[in-house]
Amino acid sequence: MRCTARLLLRLIPVVGLVAGMGRMAVAQERPSGMTRLPEAKVAYLLNCGGCHGEAGRSSPALVPDLKSQVGYFLCTPEGRNYLVRLPNVAFSHLSSSSLTVLMNFMVFDMGEGSAPAGAKPYTVAEVDRLRREPLQMGNFMAYRQKTVAGVVRACPAAAKVSSFAADDPYVLANRR
Ligand code: HEC
Image (cartoon, rainbow, N blue to C red; front, side, top):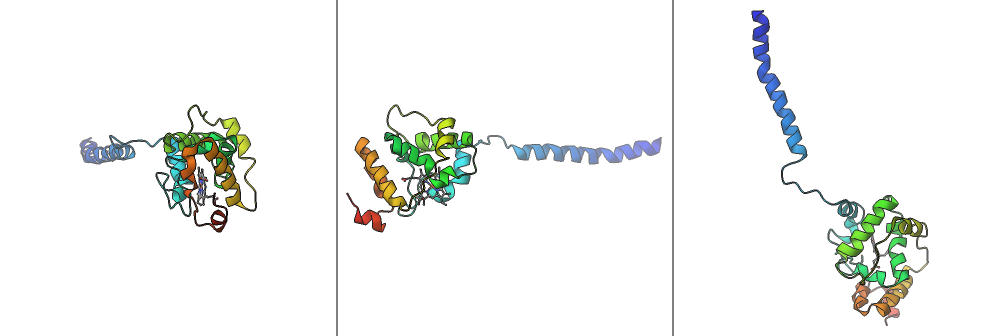
């Protein structure tokens, strides 16, 4: 009996330590004041941010900037479709529903007011349909130039979108 009591006394600190470690483990999972990144921001950072930059600004000569300008593409139906049909977007590993959340984040949040007034958010059905028609053409820059020209006609403020790949041979030869 005394033996059992001594054993129990010895075990108490061990039990207390283990219980304390458990509390530490829980505390480490979620420190107080921790902010959770929104789903769309996480999807952007993991799938797109490596090339386009954490905040949508990259090196525009090589990768187009998105911040404060990607929304202009919604000025025409062709521009709206172009954003989803881009291979890096259409073939992303995201489900169509997560991709839709990401597209709306990119256009309306990262785009910061560049989307025209009254532009409707992408729907899951629309994104699902468009990503099944990825862009396939020999000359991407020619297609983008044509798309951007239509967008700039509809929304003149979009002219700055053209800054991407300004030194591309096709762009130089076809300057407006
Ligand atoms: C491997 C690098 C890379 C990744 C990853 C990537 N992009 Fe791109 N993105 C590019 C490049 C380069 C272009 C220019 C077109 C081209 O060459 O394909 C582009 C073009 C675009 C454009 C067109 C902008 C314009 O002004 O024409 C949009 C919008 C875009 N990407 C969004 C995304 C989104 C959303 C994701 C994530 C789902 C993504 N990209 C992932 C490199 C990337």
